[in-house]
Image (cartoon, rainbow, N blue to C red; front, side):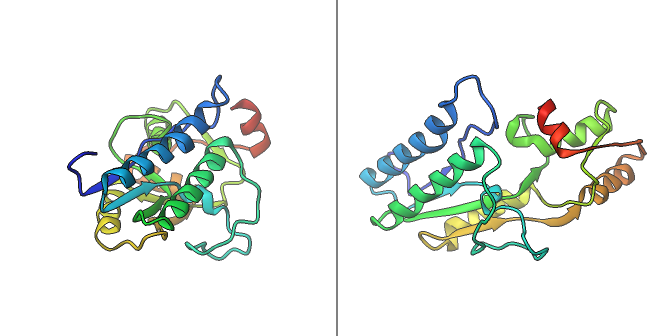
Length: 206
């Protein structure tokens, strides 16, 4: 970070499971705090911390969530838990004179390395190559999907205009799983028969 003016922190362990139960905490919380400590020591003007919209949680009343939504449901996995803890660290350092802005992307899709953090694109690829025909639950659940270029633009806007200690959702379109796969069928020209799989079965398989 030496000689830098603004730092973008995007590194994370995005998996929901690991053979090392401490890996998520070590990378998503401890290493993130070390980044804040280093930035503070070097007098960095601003840190943009990339968290996740998953922290905000699902809507309870059918209305869209926003940055001020208070999560009432338990976290679903260790990734969400550690990201929430990291956000607490971001707010803590903002109170100690480090300008930290948090961004919360939703389900990102677009070109890039097919890793745990690019899961939506993996689903798109699986549909296109006919290696996956699963639709979660009834297909009626709504999710938010955002294109990678819009996330990048959001990161730069956070660096330019973001307020310290605040968080900003980087989102796109709210669509159901049925709408999502219908769009894939239209764009790819490939209409697939999809198997509806209950969430408990999916979680057990995963």
